[in-house]
Length: 452
Ligand code: AMP
Image: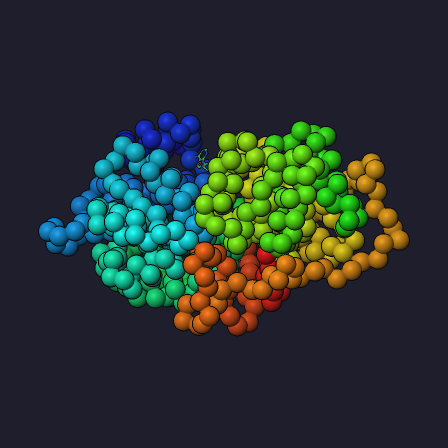
């Protein structure tokens, strides 16, 4: 099955071919025809499945194929709104819009916090057909009267589960209230909590349901491995692995921002170029780190779970869990950054005695035992007793409180870590292999604290 046979405009098919995509991924095969019909869509898919093209290509087709509705005089309206949880994801989605739409006359822009609002206001004065935004800054524009959403034809909530995790639900509801009733809604989510189900029920009108197998269920292209090691030998082991195997483009996950900073500094001292990326870094520092990492001049990027969302790097070869995540689904998100679009990838977890329970939870979720391999020279000392896992390091207070509830977060963190208040949410994978068109079984409750 080719992109052309899905009925997409020739100009879109040409752009996609130039990017080297030869055939649609499973999510694209399902999502593109569904979106082209104009129906609402509920899609279970995570990063790495090709979901961005899954919604972007048919949106471009639909917008290019018909003129905007409503009065033709005055400023042309924004016609499609794509909401994302993070700035990085917004930037990447808009880059895809530009790449896929390069032969069309449609225009797009990104809108996120942490950067000056004035250039955005200026850009909005010209024509913007497709707006890719994080919720907070979008509402800032609405409040300032610089953005009119009354003629939106298509709305996308991308990584909706993450948006809710980050406390954006109130912002999303406010935004929904600003949109015209007659529109197409597309909701993409990797997992399915009760909160997501409620949002989907209130947002979508008889949606088409599609889902693709989670990468964890079919992760043939990702070699997963656990290296048991003592907690205070993890850093040496990581440096050893990187140097021994000459790894480049290594994405390393830590649980806390402080831990990310410390590890990046220590690796640097070991002669391995490393930078940390997390919500306390300025947008400039994050963009710089990401671009150096992408081009290969930065060997290691150390990230927290939230910061790593949306980092989309083709064929990322190595993901290292320096610390296992508290939430087992985050393991799946983390390793989903490697081995994407059929490329080979390796996901290595350094696991100390404190993390046995976390490892067991992950193995339960992915329904397989991960192979354990002790690295010579790093044999764990059996006499070391487990210690409780440090939940809050580096003064790691929970991030923002969401709008409507003071205190507001400082601008530098505007799109990251708005935590919802109230009870913890159950998170469920939307899609399980062999479990089509169902929303997947519950996989347990999230711990109250999500720290980074
Ligand atoms: P996404 O899941 O949207 O983050 O996409 C994951 C990666 O797959 C991106 O780097 C895309 O450029 C790439 N990609 C998307 N669709 C295809 C395709 N049909 N063939 C090859 N690569 C693709």
